[in-house]
Image 1 (cartoon, rainbow, N blue to C red):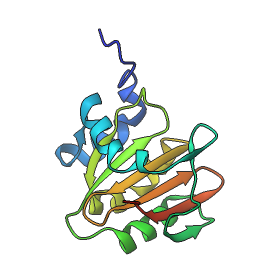
Image 2: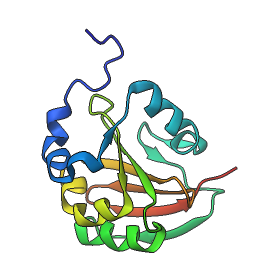
Image 3: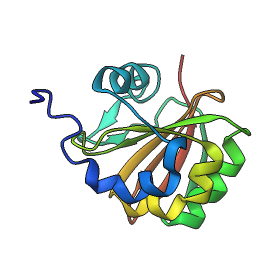
Length: 143
């Protein structure tokens, strides 16, 4: 029995994991927190889930909030073979690591599985925030 409340509902992303297959790495809670420490946690927050973009290098804002919008942003900021950590707003769903190309191929499933998520590009040190109905923001991770 898990006491952290992490990863209780992996079926919420089961279709994405099935589509990506062995290319997906489901993170443990400790791995999730380690990646969050070098990405998400480098930003202040507004309310409980939105990131505060003041004082950081915002690379792009997009009012699109669909798979095509995500696909285009990943193509701009993700390098070939680059690993992308996908964090969902609900920590009951485990975070996963995918190659940028898998995110591009399954962008609809990524945004369709949540109301909010964040994508951390491990090589480029870029974070994309997705808020359903609002769009995407891409920013450089502050030092």
